[in-house]
Length: 241
Image (cartoon, rainbow, N blue to C red; front, side, top):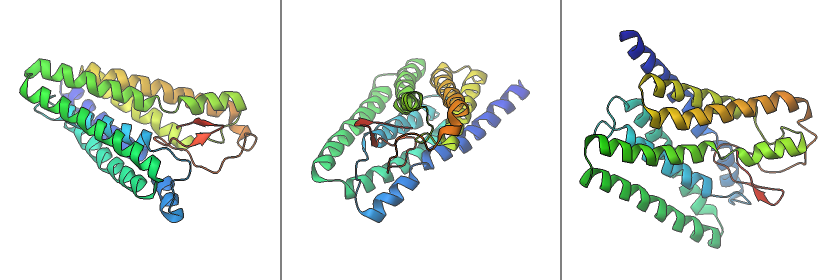
């Protein structure tokens, strides 16, 4: 038991480290936004949705909901803070129409989180509370990990990894794998399942990178950088990675 507990903590710490790299990935994009004082064609939707994922996961990791998952709350609480900053910057520099859309979505996201938190506190107890919050957190974790699917399809279509940064794909894989093992060791399906999906998607990205790594410059050029939570428009579609 002592070994399992030590491994559980170790993978949780590693998950925090790799997760931090994922949440810091948009910094490059927002440095550009601030420098140009414009959000250009970037979409704010992925940042708001990732904020919801972080808020729900932070809530799930709290001792009053899910014992022994404090490390989950630490990284997702950090992620929520970073995503909130990204959303704030986006709202400052976004065009009026986009600003209204993202403001409305943000209000919806905060309402969803508040509803989940209040229902879990006032109407549910013990195991029922954990199941309710766990399902909510798992659903939005899968959505977050699934955000690079459009970029993966573009890589296959263009046979170029120009828009899929290697280190981002690597940390998606490492982060997902770390939390997947953490969830398995802690016998927590609400952590293991969504992060198992993330680990699998990260592995597919790395495989695509290995196949098309020699074609970085052959795809259609684009001015926008791509990272987890970035919804810049590529070929007329919203692409994330």
